[in-house]
Image (cartoon, rainbow, N blue to C red; front, side, top):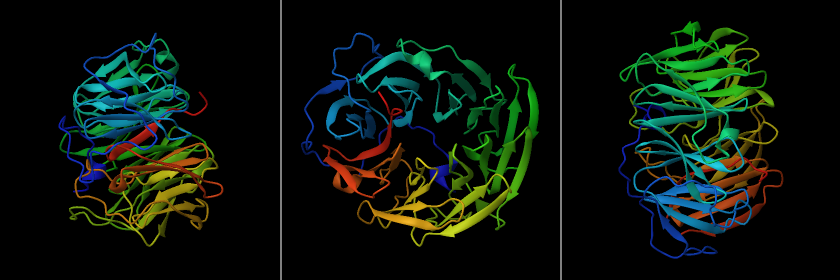
Length: 399
């Protein structure tokens, strides 16, 4: 069972990070707060952080300056917490054991915006909307991230799946909502709803459906255990993998490229498969190209660059910059030391987050976080933190 991609459920209990060490931060401060209840960001006295990053650690969150990587704030938050972009210049969405909570990263405080529910899962941004999928209830919430500005819960479009499952949803420019189909035991495909939540399309030929990505031309794909399912121009198209079992569970898209980046796994019985091949899915031709990088990677290794480049962080410590049209590795950036993906998907491993032309890479084994210029491959900054980080994300740049 491919645990990193087949489930993103939250346990509510933090897992010990093997490399965590209680040492002081390099370039940070000792400003620590304990979160007990949501607080509205408006009126906060904290100095604003420029283009902040938010990294989770065992028991809390670190807020860092996106340029200098200086540690601005430590927020204590029990449990295993996931960090996702909210889609605007100020906020991130934190998946906690009680639901999705909105964190004002610029002012380093939780707001009153919260979407409660068991097992909060995927958070998707597309076409100016943010979509939340709560696995434990099957509920989908869609909102405009501009509505987060006053610190209150924004108005949202809601839809509840026929049965709870580990799913994902995305709203298209025309108001159609694509959402996955499944139960807690079995996931089968996706459906599309019109603006009034009336079903207009359905496809149930995507076993183990997981993840989503949107390409240029608003072609949306969800991953299957035997390829991908593409929704484009009002039609579903199944793209078969070259292997009987060819699982593409994690995908990354770019508005500048018609080619999607995906992982690729072929061992259905593996406790944890460590693949060396990635998939490039051409949404124009409905074909899959496999590229062997000669190194394995994890589900937190995939991203897209400012020009649509496909980016993969390998376990050899190298950040691969790939032309999605040809599959050629055009550049290799030495980012971190060699690492091994842990068996438990909730445990820390190097994580890649890209914003504009900057790649941020965490190195939990050293309690460090680095930034790189994607154009030149130059390291911009590094910071050593009190504890090893796990997830890494940030706001949309430009605050």
